[in-house]
Image (cartoon, rainbow, N blue to C red):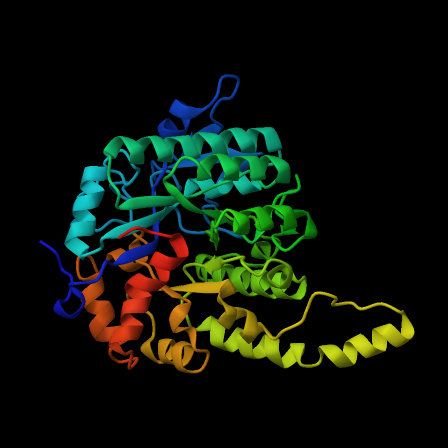
Length: 409
């Protein structure tokens, strides 16, 4: 039974940010000879498991930069600590039960799903670039194998790549493009350089060739962090779940967007498409305005630098942030319970109706508590109160994603 509202029954609903929950066994089956899984430890009190990479627990359980008291491996379906809606049919939320996953999609009224990694995002924190590459290949091969075996044309995925080695990341991106099931690539806002925390931002010039290749391959770049997993340097300023989650998502998006604009990535790669996931729509109108406020002062700064130092500190900044956003370089996701007033602001003030994508965050608990009524709630509690037109709703639920991911509906 589908819970797709009557007014959108003819649309193909595309969920642009869902997840799989990877188990160690999934990685192990596809690891190349010579590589093994990392250490995995079990908390005797909570009976939940944690990955151990470079001497660090993932997820960080609590304390500095930490999350909740539960491990990333079992965090959704653990009988005691799991965050799970019992109505869901899929087993353990890997891609081993795609039949169950499709049943869940049918119940929600979702027609297509783009899957992001969960544990796979740890790869970007690793010190050893060769190990990172092996794990990335194992993840991508696992995902491709399971989707192809299911013979479904409703589930696609974003790949992961070993950005510790840009040339290897480009090779992996080219390889997964040919596998047919990957529509984009998921990356964090900071990547490891072998330090305790990941201090190399995605707008570092070293990543320019990779982002250029992603644009050439028509593969959107989804910037996705998990605050208690991502080793962003500022995470260690915070020491409880509320602080870590609140600042982790928002600062990651704001920093990445600011850097990509100020370092001229959108100016030099006009076809680059970047999706900011799981941060809502409300931050972008404010941050676009704040960036524009400062970018309008650029010419004065340029003049001073040219007169005193004979250099332009911003050679690639040619437009306002709002202009790059409206040019189609930037996308954001809206979820079931986003604020309708902020959505209205994003659409009417920033003209973002072509840049907003629908997402459920399946099977994570944030939105899955609404299952199977996600779409009904979105229409009645978000879209209609926001004053969206029929055309704008169609763009957010179907057209924008169809065009961005080049989906054949």
